[in-house]
Length: 441
Image 1 (cartoon, rainbow, N blue to C red):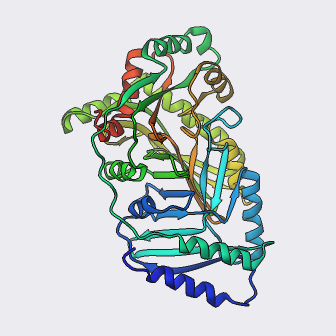
Image 2 (image 1 turned 180 degrees about the horizontal axis):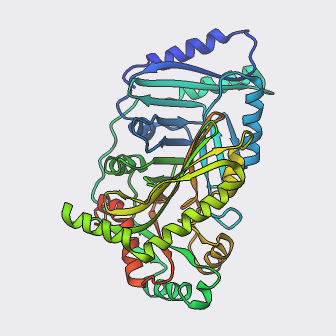
Image 3 (image 1 turned 120 degrees about the vertical axis):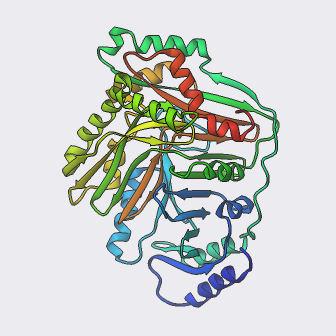
């Protein structure tokens, strides 16, 4: 921030609350100047720190700090939404995510489910940026709430330019290694296995160790610059660990009762030039194995949405071109019944068939039994939830960054006809963007 004015302005608003009757949720806001939200997040000392931007053109950019209230389950989050809906005032945005397979051992500091109402929110749209302070006066002592808010404001730091990404030497280990991967693909494509589980999404953890990892926010900024058609997210629950990503896949977007989701599955690389690129895209659309993979996804989505919707419509298959890969995508629109909640949607939609498999339970059973690395929040859900609208991404194309290691994750849908070497190469293609940023491309 170029001056202390926005912080001073919020302090004055806080002082002015004085003895006014306070209940429910309150947001104090002031316009501010900020050139880079990630540069602002990078210098803050308050945790958690969180960043979110939807992939839609002109989407609001959110940077959030601290916590007013946190929720360890969808039921608790939904209960809080209901409380504030009844109070009829302003409605807040909650940010957070969920693990791929809750109940299995995940990552330390990343609970199965964690959504929070942040203390400080910085939002930027084309019209400009707003700095906000969130307050809750349900069953809390108002003086204590105001004191906590004041302390968080006092801890805010001025925005600084992001540090450069310096060349670094990394030691690479893949889990599973390629030989073990080939054995797993052989198991999944065995006729006996295919007869009851036509698709399993196997994943790989690529662990890059180094004495000192780069700033996660600097890395996300560089990654984001080359991933315009993707979601962008980052979270630090503790100062020395972060989870960042630029996923192309939407879990769902809800505006009121209108829901949008998609079947994104089936992959090929990008071509050297426009002509080769188009040839590869045409081959992908015509390819039996990739079409089957996409079909597995959309059929399951349609089945899952049916009980919650008065109508569901599916679009035509088309190609989405990303920096290193092309995918088959079909968009799905649904009109939800009146009382359908995000809790209900998040109880059935993730993990999607694009990251788990079909049928879900037997695919997950295979993954639990055979994958030795922990997926944690990789391939889980991440995003924003509010009473009126919600938007969540599938947390793929991501990196888990610790003090001495960066862990990259990629998955491939294994179906009849999958070849181990081709699928292994697809995993490399999916992490190519971030590897090149780290100087490993």
